[in-house]
Image 1 (tube, rainbow, N blue to C red):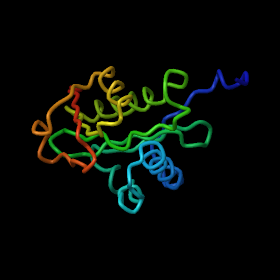
Image 2: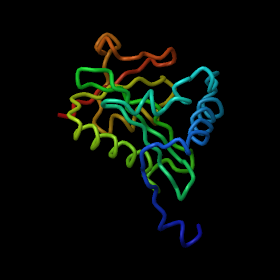
Image 3: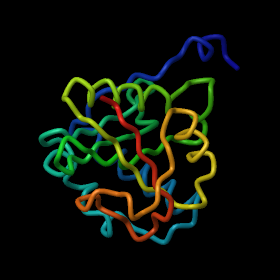
Image 4: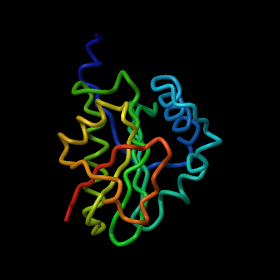
Length: 169
């Protein structure tokens, strides 16, 4: 490891359109390359409309940066009733774990922002194969729930079979 690498930290900032292509490449690359999920950017139109889809009402979208490079993403989708859906949490493989704390930084920023907005509950859906993500969510205070316990407005994705919630206010 180079000396300067031990001092580097990621910075979490709100999404701006200049990050658009990198966000798409990161998310689709992880979905297809690491987890063999047969999905394209075209099948996720929200990725090309982040500002209008996520950054409205109690929703938002953040990127984790190492310098100018996008190394992680996380978002909130407002589903009404002071509830939100956590979506698009992806971290580049080499930025996972305690060394950079990328996922932890992303989630902390999201939760701080949601609390300030008066959000009461965060819900999320994930695929059964994301074992490390399950452990992360559980260690972070999320509780697993049944799909029948989700709010009616929660957007269940076809690949999501495991669901979590966290009360934050």
